[in-house]
Image 1 (spheres, rainbow, N blue to C red):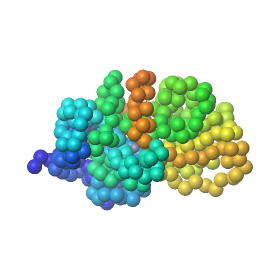
Image 2: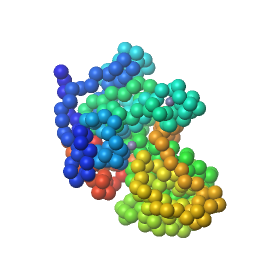
Image 3: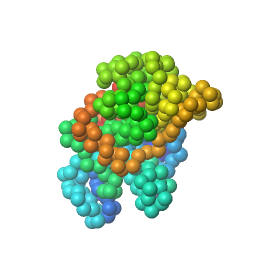
Image 4: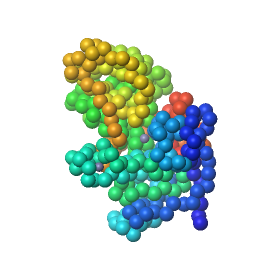
Length: 335
Ligand SMILES: [Zn+2]
Ligand SMILES: [Zn+2]
């Protein structure tokens, strides 16, 4: 049987203990409804770190992480139509919903209790090959190479959903807390749509990046922005930033928390943080419509995607660098 290089998490633990392990695995065989994709690029997401460190409880063990895959279809199951060998395909986080529950039926498949996720419930893209149900694979826009497309598949799509959840009014002021892979894409979408963007981050290099991409102002992680914010998105997985971000909102403003995991939020003061109809909202994954909308926007407004490339055999270094805030933009693994 053909084998492939892959990385798996068998025993989650602190990143310093190197929970990722290099292995050889059989090349997966696509099920009837699946594509087999030869991975050409897989971007690293903070969620991969949560899977490796055990912040997300294991759903499959061992599991190959990675859910921002750009690759080439090399085979597919008998029930697949509309895809052919040689097509470029994207594999993202959401890979199954039941389409029968109350949430799916009202257009909120991101809340489906039967949902399954790439790199958590099923093997992902830290490997030379990966499979995906064809109905959950994305067609990808032209005008980007594989490396620059990969971060769009989670960082881009989830950031776009967070932006929608933040209910930024047209021409409004948007605060962005934490400025990594997802934030730098979301900022560009917001600016293209007419927003004025304020960046709060502890990283001087990220502040420079934000200003270079068109942000009006950049300051420290919890520094008050110079104007009240109509909306804000918290990308840093740091609950301590929720109170200053809520305080920075104007009346009626909304703070959306983009991450899947957040450290504890300190006690809030109703008057200072929530009164006058300030809102605090979470973001749970995305629908496929979010993904298709975002990729259409990315086709219409070419995004400047900052990446740091790592060969696949350095996936553990890429994850450690992400944990240590040493990656500019998105880390992308290339087999
Ligand atoms: Zn459902
Ligand atoms: Zn992700």
